[in-house]
Length: 209
Image 1: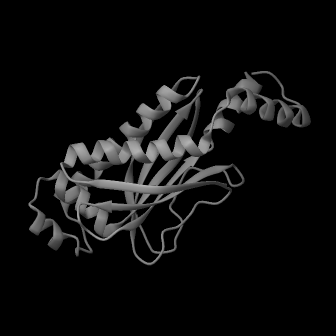
Image 2: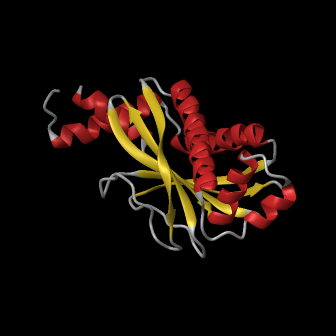
């Protein structure tokens, strides 16, 4: 890799982002929409996402009020690896897992009250995570001018108002998309998608390559 002079590097990265014309807000919103569409088809129930609002942040967001499941996403863009995640409230993550297990609606409504997960539910959540990663992978591969891939890095429970653990360098820009979501006919909830700044990853590679 070539040596980058800090001042010149910032200017060149800004120029490259402009030339790419990459709308990160649209990209993150498209990832959320694709996740909802893919899971809806797989579990044969509605998974609706509306009104995505996207902003660049320096800190990982936390889910409020209750325990969330963090579905971790391992992204590799232009040879650089970082992590993102999708935060889903525990009852709604359980609902997706239960529908993945082909449980009937009445049973799913009861399972949403679970506070502990056994083996079958843990495996179903991992499957949900794989489909979420696949949706992100499809969007990024089509949208980016460089090679990219997304894999599932598993999932974990996160306490209310606690930021999820991610391989993230403090200060690096993050894309945070918040949207209203609903699984089947259950109550709406806030869905939070966190991704590394894709434009920054592409521009960093272009500057240092």
